[in-house]
Image 1 (cartoon, helix red, strand yellow):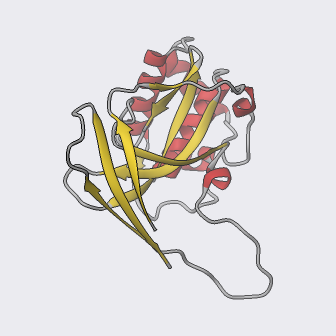
Image 2 (cartoon, rainbow, N blue to C red):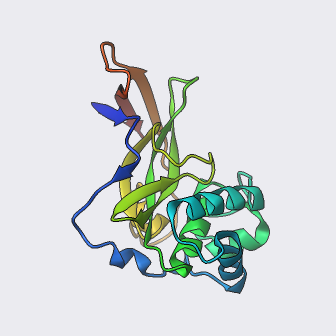
Length: 203
């Protein structure tokens, strides 16, 4: 499949008319334990504004080392936080657990991260938190608070809500998904916006 996506590099927030309250719900993957609650309270110091959540994002990045293979798709935020390592999915789950423990609605976002030095997009996950009647992005893995290089595909309460493929099977066997995404910039695009052509192949 092929398509064009325009990214507004100056947009900091996304406004929606739907209620954000459902994203206060706790799931098995995002349930905060006492360690997470204490961490969030200590880093945010009773604040729940954007600057506090940016501090939280940076603190989580320092606490949890990016390590491939350290966790599985069903690893919870509490488990990854205790292990002090994980990937973008774990960083996002931990952020959601912290934010919701502070009473801030937050949701899981899955999509792609456009790298400036590569023609390939990598699958990625980050968080959005509801502050001042808008959704603001928080990419713990890359410490980015503006989604200037992010292509959003889906949102949900956690990974299971927004994963690329989900289903059930009976019997034995296993499955794998391989996706290759190539991005190329479009010419004649205003400087404040990035327009890319995306070609995806799935197996």
